Image (cartoon, rainbow, N blue to C red):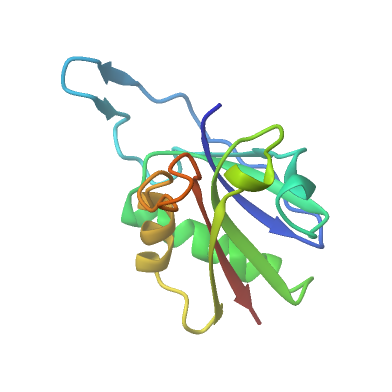
Length: 151
């Protein structure tokens, strides 16, 4: 299992990949990843499991290291998607196949308009800790985050 950040909507969401290959350096000793920082160095891949988390019909998973330039592109991507649908959801979850009532995720939801959306919202969702707020009675419960952006 792993952490996943994805966008969901009731309209088709286009995939995205960088215009070129960029170098990738992973340092396991200090836990850092260096990818050159190019604004277009991220991926939006079809996310088939979207309906496991939301009622929305379509999803793309976001594969990236956050930068402000990349977040600005995601804001523009969301604005573009809102031309065809009333809302887009930005999710940050732990991928799960199945969970019992006792270990269901704790949901953190917020709704804003597209006029309010900033790169800080994108960063907050991307940085959100999945395991930071477990229920005291059920310490293995993850936290899921959903930011719904409306027209």
